[in-house]
Image 1 (cartoon, rainbow over the protein chains, first blue to last red):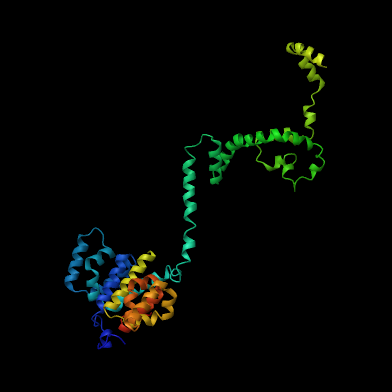
Image 2: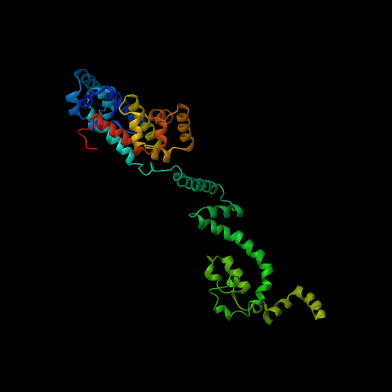
Length: 272
Length: 101
């Protein structure tokens, strides 16, 4: 079709089609300019033998001069020295087309998944990753300057990171953990009194009870810190906290024997 | 290479192919069929094509490509389609006679 009035036979000759060369120049030059192709792609097709066969002597002289004056001879030097227009002028079109074809097919094959995109697919895929990347550096930056144990900050850092959790937890458990437990202990100690009768059922504990964790499972559950262990033993770790509080008589005698207790002992005796 | 670079290259090749009569607008539409255009062109561009055709009283490949420029072709159409158009033109020109495509 096309090219009204022109003979298709002219297209069979290299450069016989008047407008073919500008097309090849545009395709090849733009490919090089845009990084779609590199000079190595050109020289892979426009080999030294091809140049020897088709390149005119003046261009060979220019090329030799450039090569002699260059520290390194590579494809870039050759292509830049000769220039794409000169290559397309003298190198057979089918060779140039072979180069362009390779480049074009390669450009299609690399992101071949992209073309079918309906412009909506890539968006959800690309957007999610960036945010998490941004958060991590922020957490890392916050940590080094803040070794000082501000309880709230430490908790935030530990929640942000996975790697440094161990040191953070150590620090955190000693401060915030106790604070929480201490605050909770005051109201709960009286509740713990009710638990002592529970020890026999405490054999069942493993499954159901979140509140009963103190009496039965705590040692297993937590990453045993000394503080946690002590607190839990006061509360319910041993069955009878009453027994723990029930001081032996001998101990009471020792207190009464002191000087201060003598005076108090009178008062106590009166009271009694 | 980025998609932008590839897109720019296809736009340049399509533009050059049309400028140099390597292929004609009708050749482009032989590959960028109405189905392809309807599937990939955004609504506003389809609207422009139709409006231009209505104003001119006819819809021709040349008129379509006046609105859907090579840049827009490369931006919206699958590059495989554009490449088929280019490769077919190269075949017709006989430049790939020694290359199996």
